[in-house]
Amino acid sequence: MGALLELRADQPKSETLHDLKQLATARLALIKDRTAAKARLAATTHVLPSQQIKRRLKQIERDLSQVTEAIDAIVAADKDLAARAEILTSIPGIAKVTACAIQGNRMRFRC
Image 1 (tube, rainbow, N blue to C red):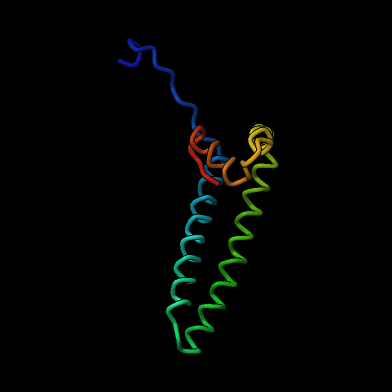
Image 2 (tube, rainbow, N blue to C red):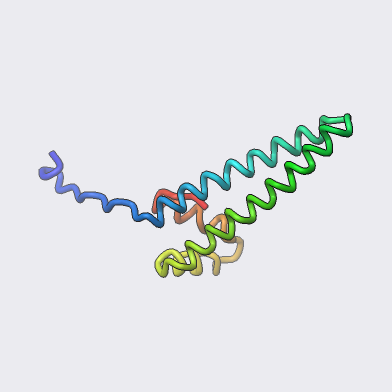
């Protein structure tokens, strides 16, 4: 059937794309954790849980920063990804995250 329809085989994803996908998933999980922690903090009246949640929020922010730096490093190290990101971010209103999401639709990863 593939030969009849003259389908082309997909190129296997590179290790870089696998790494980016894992980091993007981790970033999204951290953002969800941060949102949940902020909601818990807003609903907490006791001092001890409040302090614990604030510490957790600081840790989430540190982790998020590390993941973002790793994503930036991977994109910067790949000429093709860096070139695409540069073109996309040159468009007014498109920042790094949006550029990664746009590329993700094309290359099946999100930043």
